[in-house]
Length: 253
Image (cartoon, rainbow, N blue to C red; front, side, top):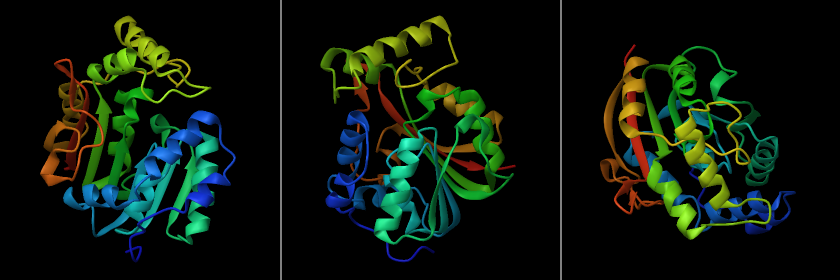
């Protein structure tokens, strides 16, 4: 186990990080109010007591640090070197020695087979070729290990087109969402990024891909609704369209 779960990241530490405008705003948002809400979600999903945890697409590292209080060792990986460096500095500032951050993509994880027994992938699959990413998550998860996936349906992007949520000088959520809808309709599955847009995820398809990869889906539903996992962070639907959703699965073989 990683000891006492951290509850808060010092805002002064965040202010010292060298970050782009959108990334800085993102870090401020995810760490506002502390880490307890992430820890509550993971405990409800059965993640406490793990040996090795993986935060696949760690972003700001908030889930990594919450998981570090529940597992002996945690690894966070992200395609953004800027965010990996920032998470490493936060870990040093918090004196967390059991959480490590590496640079890399989800479609080709730099870990051996059956390395982790707790794996989470929060709001990242939309930015990758998620069929390949799920195969990689299956490869690195031990039999009996848990995987928690959060992804965004079409309602999330329609909402951001209408409301232009969380804009920044270097990021336009409306443009990104329009590109995402275009990528999904056109079937373009390469070069996905905040600049090039993502792809819409579909809960039924994610469930089928997990089953094909050797997982048993334990629960799925709108974001934050699984197994009493605390308060939702994102809307589960918008204008009658599915938005953010969660899937919990166990590796069977």
